[in-house]
Image 1 (spheres, rainbow, N blue to C red):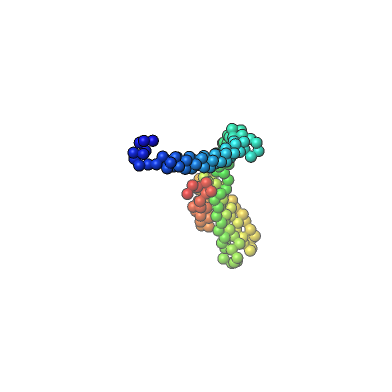
Image 2 (image 1 turned 90 degrees about the vertical axis):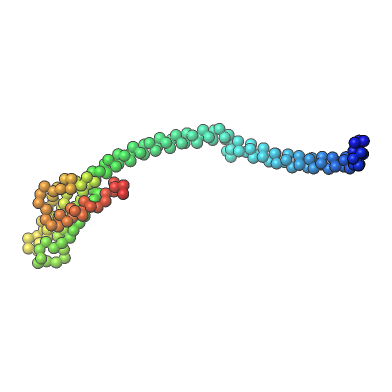
Length: 172
């Protein structure tokens, strides 16, 4: 007390200052206590979950779902692989050319149709229409993009067009 008097500070002012600081600290304590209660309430709600499940049970359920999804992904990958293997043997590239086989009639009633697999195996189907003799249909086998039977110009054209088409198995 003599020390404060020697500095010229009244003790009453010090006491009032300490009381003000104490009052501010009490107010801060009350504010923080209310915030803590609100946080605690939110925390307990979070830990219980909305249907009364606790967080651990919810997490374990999610892991089980992830395991099921992972198993299903593996099954789907296997099935997709099987589908792609089967798809190699389906007709996926094609072309058709219509033309007049004989100049005496119009309408382009004759045609050549080529259907090929991804490996360029398939057939060329040709229908030749004539007003005098009727309609004739020929089929020629194609193996690896080549025919072992002589092809007409239209059949060569339709085969070339079909071979140059993109397959559904192309990655491009």
